[in-house]
Length: 289
Image (cartoon, rainbow, N blue to C red; front, side, top):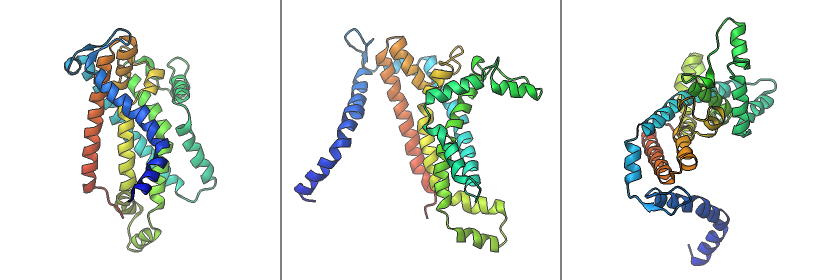
C-alpha cells in the first residue's frame, strides 16, 4: 500500500480513532497510573507502588464482591442463554405475528437499564409487588427479594436475564436461519427424531452463535452495575455488592480512587484471562461451516 493510500485510510479512520483514543485509551492509561497512587480525588496523589493491589488482594471484601459477581454470572448466563434459545426456536417457526413478537421481545434490550431496574424493583416489592401477589394467589409465600440478603442477588439475576433475552434471541435466531434446511430434511428421511435433530444438528451448527453469546454475556456479566445500583445499592448488608459497585463506592463514597483503579485493573485482567481461555477452547466445540 502506497503512502497516499495509507494517508487516505488514516484520514477516514480519524472520526472513530480520535474518540477511541481520547475516551478509551487515555482513561485506561490514566487509571493504571492512578492505581499506583493513593488519591482521594481532591488532594495531590501520593505514590503507593503496588500497595493498592496488595491491600485489595488481602481484603476480605474484595473476595466477597468477586464471589458475588461469579454467582451472578453463574446464574445469569444459563438463564439468559436457555431463555434466548427457547425464544429463538419458537420464533423461527412460521407463526402468525412473528415479526411483532420478535420486536416485542427485543424491546427491553433497547430500554434504559434504570427504567427496567425500577420496574423490576416494583414487581419484586415484598409488600405489594405483582410477583408476590401472584405467588400468594396460588398459596405460596413470596420471598423478600431485594430486601432479603438471600434473595437480593437472585432478584438482580432475574431482571438482568429478562432484559437481555431479546439480544440473545436475535443472535441465536440469526444462527438458526443460517442452518440449511436440507440438513434437517435429510435427517428426517433417515428417521431422526426432533430431539436428535436438535442435539445432533441444531446445537453443533449453532455453536458459532453460542460462542459469541457466551463471550459477550460473560464480559457484560462481570461488569454488572446499573441494575445492582438501582435495585439494591449493593445491599442489604452488602449481600449483592459486585466488583464494579465496589469500584464505584471506593471512588465516590470512600475517596480511595487509587484502590478503585487497581480493582478495575484486577477485573480487567480476570476478564482478559477468561476471554483468552474461551477463544482457545472454542476449537474443541465450535463448528464453523
